[in-house]
Length: 353
Image (cartoon, rainbow, N blue to C red):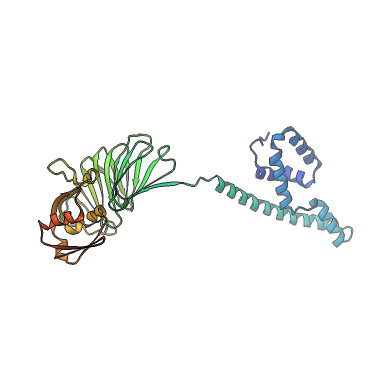
C-alpha cells in the first residue's frame, strides 16, 4: 500500500488515478479519492493544492472527455466522431503529459532552490597599521596582522573548520581529531589538527610563507604541485614569480609553470624571538634583509606608501628591531646604518640616495 503521508502537491499530481479523479473520467477513481480525503483530512490542504494545479494545467476547462466529444460532434459527421475524438484525445493527453512534466520539473527546481541554504560568510579585516585578535567558535585564536582579512562560513566548527586568509595571520588551533582545521590562501592550502603556525600571503608581495611553531601541518599548493609536511621550526616560502634567489637553500625545483619553493628553518635571534612571528608581540624584526624586502612590512605597519628613486638604495641591507617608533624614527635609525635620504609627503615616503 502506498504511503502518501509525506506527499506534496506534485506527488499527488503524477498519480494517474488522481488525474482521472480531477478530470472526472473514472467513477472508481473518483470514489476512491473521495473516501481517501475523508479518511485523511490532514492532507486536505495538499490535495486541494494538487487539484488546483491540475485545473491550471488543463486550462481550467470542463472535463476533457466532454470537450473532445462536443468538438467531434461539431467538426465531424456521425460515425467518425469516435475515431477522430480518440485521435484528438491522444494528442491532448500527450500535450498534458508534457505540460505536467515540465511543470513538475519547474516546481521541483524551485523547491530545491528554496530549501538550499545560502552560505553566510563572516569576515574580519584590518587596515594598514592595525592588528586584531580573533577567537573562533571552536576556541582557536587568530592574530590578524595589518592589511589582512579572515573569513569563515556560518556553521564553522560543527562539520568543518575552514577559513580563507588574505594577508598574514598567526593561528593557535584547538585540537579536534574529527574536524581538521584548514586555511585557504591564493597560493596554497594548509591542513592541521591542533598546532600553532604563521601564514603570510599578501597578494601584493612576491612570496608567500607558512611557518610552523609547534605541531604538524601539511601544505598543498593550489596548482597541485604536491604536498609538503612541515615539522616544528620549519618555514616554507613560495616564490610567486618563479624567480628563485640563488642564496636560498633546499630548493625544490618544480616545472617552469609552477612557483619555486624553499624549505628552511624560521629565524631565531638572540633573545629567543622568532623573526617571522615577532609582529604578534607588536615588534618588527628585520634580520639581514634588503630595503626592498622590508618595504612591504614598513608600509603595512606604519600605513604609508614607500617609493624608491634609486635602485642601489633598494639593495641596502639592514638588521633592526622596531616597536613603538614612528616611521620617522624608524627611517632615522636605518640612516645610521646606510646613507640615504627620505621625504614624507602625507602618507607617501620618498627614499633617495
